[in-house]
Length: 347
Image (cartoon, rainbow, N blue to C red; front, side, top):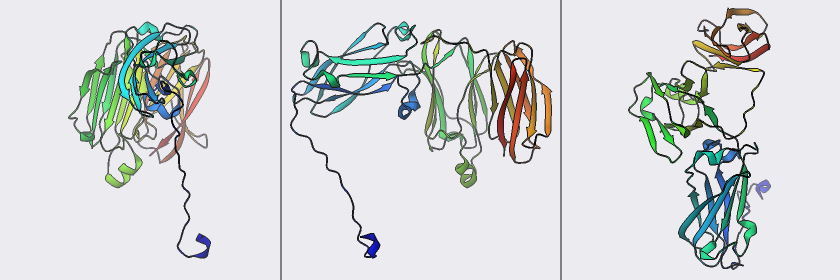
């Protein structure tokens, strides 16, 4: 008892055991890794890359073959023939190739992926216990990119830790940057054929491009990774403290579901926290123009300026905040449709 000061502590243990298998031919579909909106798998979702599932043998006979049938909502089936050799309770991650991108399109807008295991060990139809052979997952559609875009990669002073690559849905590397130089800007432009793609940034020291601890203890500066339309707005701004890697999945030339057009506008400010230059962007229904202000939390106006319109739905401004004191500030952008605000922190 810890309260007696004896130094002896009691520990609790759980023993998990299995009885003999109840069925001879029984394959279980354990989990859908992607597509899925389960937060545990958010590192590689949302995506339209090849679906991946985990199968397990829960029968007494070795699992040597099965058909994995999968579909999106009420769409067409894909039948993938799996072959292997799994003993009782052994598992395997299986990737299911998608040869036609139109298979992903869900005109119903439900965005539900379903996988089912049939024809186990050469026996046609369902296995001995089909209740564990079906798995569904709700998922979110990845970003749809229309037209050419470019990657804007600013390295920190530990660039040897980083690399980035562009891959297609099958995992083939289409472009890669390694051997990066410290505190250097790289801009790479891409104009891709219709399909599903991923941009992946890696960090070998597991602290991303900008992490407060690395800055304070190791003197590591802040880098950034952005994806932007050519002549347009930012598509994705990668977080700075992503750990070992960050992945951005997107589609070109098609959308997975019905897209809703918003009557509102979206305001973005970055980097946040900021040291010198703050980028202010607004995208949406702003045909009448946009006017931005920066205030402190007491409401005192420190800056005001008409924003530069690059199209009828996009405006931006680059504000020099290097002289501001450390603290929290407010950006307010006014348009004909409304007023939008965002806070930012000056380091």
